[in-house]
Length: 345
Image (cartoon, rainbow, N blue to C red; front, top):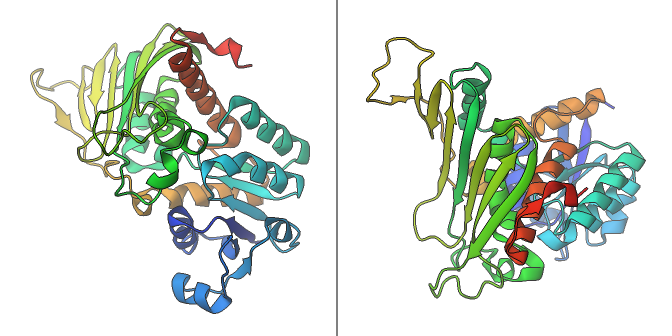
């Protein structure tokens, strides 16, 4: 196989960003889409600037022998069953987060992937951003020493001004603040702390603003994490804020601190103790999927899949662990008590 042919199921805002991204990825191309809407090749050509085969029946697209991988861009409740069906059809997988709305369904997806020997990635693309590529480098080069505390927070008001709002407010669609959006912050913290989570204590609340009271689940959650290595961490997922988008990070170690893109470290002699040093990078400062770093992530997936290897950073099993911690946090909000990760085995 010299090139992956991609079929996308679900044709909304995110799918458009994926189609545009694949135009800049070598070794793959989007050749088909599946949507409940009646679509003609001419209309698709006009909208996306390339020829696309149109399917209305997902089973028919899965039966197409020319399609090598399925890119799942549908609303959240459909991800698990569509991923399982694609894996059973022998198709590689690109899955928009969340993998599933429950731990049990996520494990079913994992079982199908393993049983069929297909490759899969999850779109936790913030790991591939310039900001967190640089942050990871700062940590790995030891400029902060041994991390003992980290917090990563997601602030993005998802109100009526967002297209997904109509379905995102429903419990059986959006599921939770973390699963619908804030899992990006949880995933980044787990990447940086490099230690398994043992226990989560989480709390939830909701804004009284008329924009957010229709939500059927807590729109702000705070998760306190206890790591196996003794570190502690905190993740805020706030989708009911009225402010500019803000992806906050704060890492504290034995030799320094990184606050968003500001660094102080004792490992670089000559720094002024009372001032931060600013790291020049492209920050994560938008919730618009067109601004997300899909291109390097998709390229890594394509390259590794064609080579028969596991992609770095956002392979399925790595993403599943971030989801497992999110499910545990949501369970803690529901029960009002700490939840150990061993409960979700």
